[in-house]
Image (cartoon, rainbow, N blue to C red; front, side, top):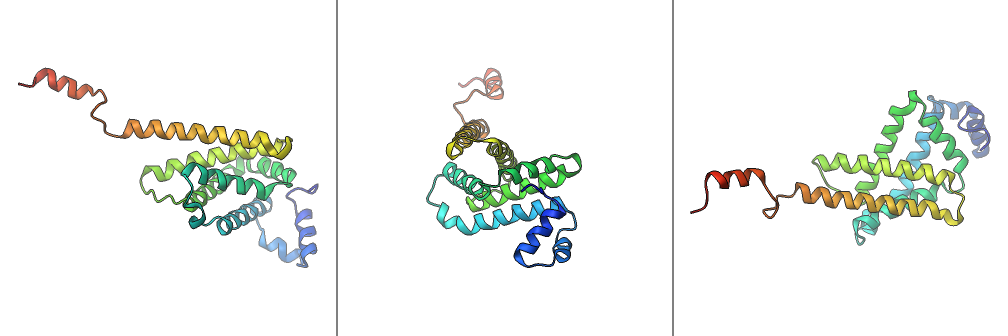
Length: 195
């Protein structure tokens, strides 16, 4: 963990698993960002294997998303130093576009496992909101020293509550509702009163 996302760490990992360090370096030509991408892809794959849609289907959507994020947090528990360094590397200006792609991809995997089939604008807004929620939760998780990461879990629950409230308000606003005041309907009734 003290070597960070470096060639020194990659060489040590390669030697540990019996791979020629030169071959391992060929697998990660982009250096740290390629290594981080592989780590994230590994978490995505493990999550998809452990929590397929059939397992999550019985839960309400809020619980599905919470369980998926908790799985990801458990997957990196004990690797907080590596996570902190990875977040710092991804925050570098030259790495932000790739980091955004990583976040989007992970959010997409989570929504697909949760059973989302949206193809309209909701497909994009759901993933953008979840990517932001997950990134914020990771930042809290990396610094959380409470027992059982209690602060992180409370933070996550509050963020999910906020997103659910937003989604309910959005659906009410976008849903055509005859009980809601309509300026156009009001003006029409002034011009053409009911007989």
